[in-house]
Image 1: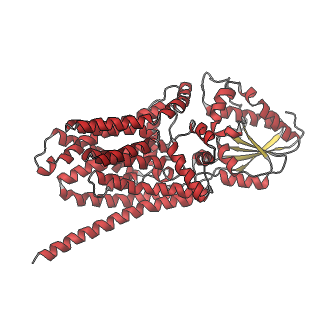
Image 2 (image 1 turned 180 degrees about the vertical axis):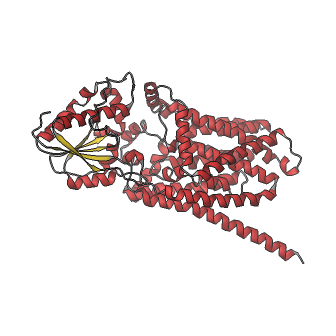
Length: 553
């Protein structure tokens, strides 16, 4: 007589789980749609991607030597543009679709580990603002995370069921991962070493050899980048010197806190739990038969080893780059943290099945709280340069001059500006190779004393003002207080600032501002940075200089 009640209870639990999972998936999709609607125009990194997609084959290979991604991202972008065009709306949609595709990738990867639903990957990684905003921009960061997840899931599935078909799939996943992101190269090594160690522990020597061979094949596919891309990184590192790990760690902490206090506290706690549970089970032999299953023991061995190797791989790569990091640089480590929390708590739920509902309940509450924090923060405008360029196109007249500093915001300015006045950078880098502007600066311009480095540009500004025309200045460099003397530097490396591009950019701009004001040109601010949530890398000021008397520069 009790059988119908039991069936009803089981069905009710299934309905409850289905509704909870559906709500979380909706909660992950909504912020991505918000990010798409607020993103606006393309900022310089996105413009660079689109420009590369329009390059010829020879130009593309040259541009890849100064890009953050291997070829896979460009293949996808070029195919999309060929099918749907290169308008801002079209390519922005591609980025958003890739960002949404991270959601099924997380679920699929978790399933390979026997996880029915990845509560903590969905909540901690899926609701991460950095992944939502920058994983969904017109760049390859989202693609890198998707292929990383597929690689990890495929590697584990191959370890558990080493069939010919699985090894073929792993080979394909490995090639896609390393050809989508340079960071994935080090994480492929971490994944394969962790899986290989588990296989060795189980005396599966053929599997160890298989992971080694697939890893070698993936490494071989990266030889062209080792020969032509990485030398450029070594040049930058030789100029800047060794970068301390504290800088990237501070940036990561800022990125982690961007998701709100609830996520920061809960995420750290779950990662700690996700590490302690496997370690405890490895040290203290369990007596429960459920705890003695081979797959659970393998997982308990894999989780801490993968966390240690993956963390070492990510941070070694960041230090090898030798440059300051940004939020999106840390997405791979966020993936490792979320996966560690997920797999560790999965072991807990296997050994204590009654805890599954507790985990699900905490996951739902956490999703609501984190969603409340994240939803306003992903309304993130990528750039204001598109509107600035359009405004200037309406107000400038022939004979005026637009100056854009620093050089790299000229990439997006050139994409949107269609005014009648000429524009230039200060110093004016080669517009045809603007994406390589830094190499031109360190090779030709920065070794010169600042007055000499911008002598030609100052002469052009002089000609414009003497003719009675205006100079419009679009700048992301902070303007020195009124009356303050210009920053004085010598040719790079400066004894105090070394090869700091920001210091030299400030010196060039301050020198030009002081030169024009001393000669009688009046300066007025036309557009200040917006107070809303805007990408700080492209939210510049706009100043206008007008001749108030006969100028003698």
